[in-house]
Length: 289
Image (cartoon, rainbow, N blue to C red; front, side, top):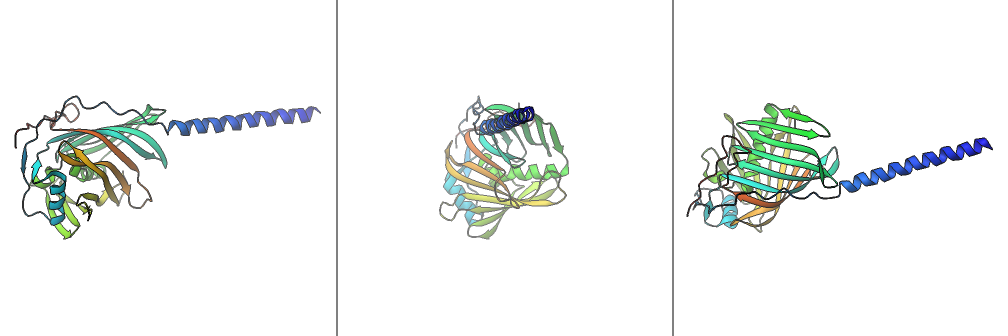
């Protein structure tokens, strides 16, 4: 009789432990389904943007994209601040994130990120390319830092891959950049990387004419070989007189789904970002076209 009673008690304890584990797992999952609030909007607003005519000699799909997105005159964007929320994959698990990025055209960028649980930050990250050096820092529940030549290459490619919506004038006005035709809906973008060059392939939507994706070979962390990488852009809507994608996906092409989905919620251009991008971030002076 005592054995039966002991067995029942043990089973009851085991059941309670399993039930508690299930509840904790459910609570943990629920905490990752709650979206964080966005970062505050930037304190400085976009001044009147000076504009210049669209340069001649661009491949046809590139020319069409700029005309659809901006018209015949291109706003000169020297700095950009963008913010929003995202879903970011960590070890195969989708997590909610908020972000705010600071870009100096063709030179530097910094992206501050917070991964949250029940809307509260548990991981803090910064993704940077400053003065030709890339870096990734994560702190909070875990602490990780990555730097070196492979990170430099990956971050430089990200800077230019995102430029078509962060600082788009750099891709047609910067003398270090050139476009090469491929076909009616594709062009090749050649960008600087230190004393060398890197290439991205840009694909444009046949119906809208707007950019649909960029692809290139990029180091993934410290892996010894480059991996095909793709950025996809959709939900283009007007922002400060330009069409801007409000959904951006980052994809490693050897995986079946994105590793990050960014939803852009706001942006300001030609504002002072020197507090986040030291040395290069003074506000560009806007003026009448």
